[in-house]
Length: 390
Ligand code: SR1
Ligand code: MG
Image: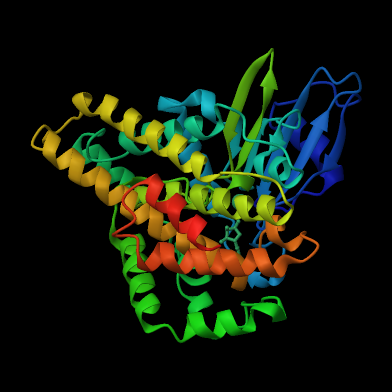
C-alpha cells in the first residue's frame, strides 16, 4: 500500500490491521503531537485499562510544515536506537510494541501517566532524586554497549554503517553547531539580546571552538547516541510507588561523540536553573551535572572489565572519560547558545515574564562553556562559572 500519513480517524483501523487492537468498537484516539518533528496519537479504551501510543514521522519537520522536507526514514533510526537500548537498559525506555517501516510508525507504551521533565521543571517542580543518575546510567549502558569496548569489531562496524543518518545529523550540524554563529534565516532572538547575538557572531575564538566541536560531532564515532537528549526527551513519574525515568524520542540517533548526549542534558539543566533563578527560586541544577556524570562515569567504569578488546588499558579509560567530560562541557555550551538565538527555543526561557536577563546569562554561560571547556575540569568549576555570572 505504501506510506500514508495517518490522521486521528485512521488510528483505530491502523492498530487493528497491525494486530495491536482487537475490539475496534472500544477505542478512542486523540492527537498529542508536541515535539518539533513528528505526530503522536494516544489510543485508549473507554474504561482506561488499555492504551497505546502511535508515533509517525512525517515527510517534513512538523512545526515548519512541507516547506522544510525531511525524510520519514528518521523513524528507522529511532526504532534502531530503541532496539539497541532494549538489549542493555530496557527499564529506561518505553516499551516498543512494534515498528512499521513502511509507514515509519512506532507503536509504543502510553506514557501519559508520566510527565515530560521540562514541563515539570517549567512548572516549578524539582528533579526527582533518581532522575539525573538514571540519565547518567542510561548514557553509560547505551554508549558502552555500542562502542568498540562493548561490541566485537565486525559487529560494531556493521552498526556504524547501518546507523549513518545524514539528514538528521545535518540538522544538528546546522541548527546547533553552525547557524547560531552566522547570519541565517532560521535564527531569531529577543531584541534585548541584539548586542550579545552580534558579539557572539563576531567572536573569532568562539567560532573556532565551535568548529572543533562540530568536527568532533562529524567524525568521532564513539558510540550510538540518543542524539537529542534534552529535558523534553525524558519522562518522569512514579509507578507503584517507585520512581520511573524514561528516555524517549531517539530519532537523531547516530554513532557519534558520547559527550553530545551528556552535554545536551547538562545544557537543559543549566537553562532550567536560569529560569528558576529568574523566578526567585533557589536552585543548583549544576548538582544534576554531578549526579549524571557520577552515574555515567561509575557505570562506564563498572562495565570496563567486560570490554571485548583488552588492548584498551585502564590508563586509556581515564583518558577517554576525560575527553567525554570535556566534549560534554563544550556541547552543553553549544546547546545553550542555539536554544537562545537559533531556530528552536526553550519554554524554560520563552515563558518567563521577562526572558531577557536569564537569556543573557545563558548566552554568556554558553560561550564560556565552549571556549573554556578545557579548564572546566569538574562540576565545581562549572558551578563557579555559573556563580561568576553574578
Ligand atoms: C528542525 S528541528 C530543530 C530541533 O528540534 C529537535 O527536537 C532537535 O532538537 C532539533 O535540533
Ligand atoms: Mg525530539
